[in-house]
Length: 393
Ligand code: CP3
Image (tube, rainbow, N blue to C red; front, top):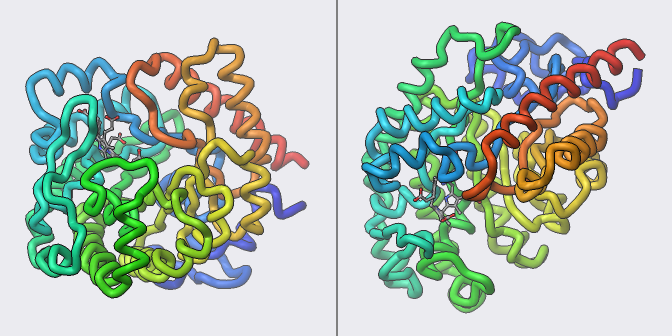
């Protein structure tokens, strides 16, 4: 048997923290038996054996879905996030309609800004806008870190989602649906705080980083302090996994990433893992950064579609699980081509333990829902035959 087969438990690494804090019995090291994660999604995050490749989608609940549009007609984005019943309903509806293996809680990356004393709003067509961007040491010092408890509504929504799915198998096997909580990474959140919104060149962000390194460091530390508490709330509420979105880390050179971003991110990843859950660390345009991102110690790295999955994974020495990496715009292709591209991603993963099927970035508005469902059906049917072949060999 080669190590490319997803059925060997040896070689699985599970942190003692995770084994202990998630309540999983069993030994964490060497070839001794490792207790299995509670769902195929969590097992894949830990590079444990799975019966088929788990699948979910970045931005699986959103404007491309009629059910979301209907809720959105009567409520703003922030209202949905802040009313646990609504957030849970949107989360559950998307997961059930698609038949995916994991539900990501409906929330937004920028929610912690409010409790840090930085109001923002979503403007139609423009995305998030922070009216008073953080561009000086004084502005950094004014940010608060003592009110993360105000984010409790997200944990409340996770509790409702967890209660809904508890003990309920989501497919013909007895598998439990994975529940994903998420936070922004310090760099990506700092970039929104400093730019005041999205950016192409990150001039203000990099200027602060280069010219006021101690203010930069304080800013990232303040963000990390709030994010740690926010992640803990989500884990306490029942999140099985935390995804850390460093969506815009790809704007950094390797040298800048390593000097200004990696250390604090590594600390945050370790702290979240110590809460007893695996961490997925995701960014876009990260081909050259992946080996450095791997040094955060994240259990799973999210891959965008620009690098073939096989190359990216090999470049990481298969030292972590990977999630990805279909181009989200492929969902607009005719079914035959879509299926060819999905199969290519599965072929690149080659049945190796530790692949979670996903897109390379989020589903965009206008995406045909039936194509998203088609991908789920395809992965369910074809990754199973892959793993059966792997067993037979
Ligand atoms: O199922 C899901 O994934 C939905 C939950 C979710 C939202 N935002 C709701 C949302 C998640 C995981 C996010 C994360 C998020 N938010 C990220 C990281 C993910 C990524 O794509 O890299 C970022 C960068 C943000 C900040 C943000 N929020 C932006 C840039 C925008 C505008 C994007 C756009 O397409 O207009 C938002 C708005 C937003 N957040 C929407 C949703 C469903 C769409 C706006 C709406 O419904 O009015």
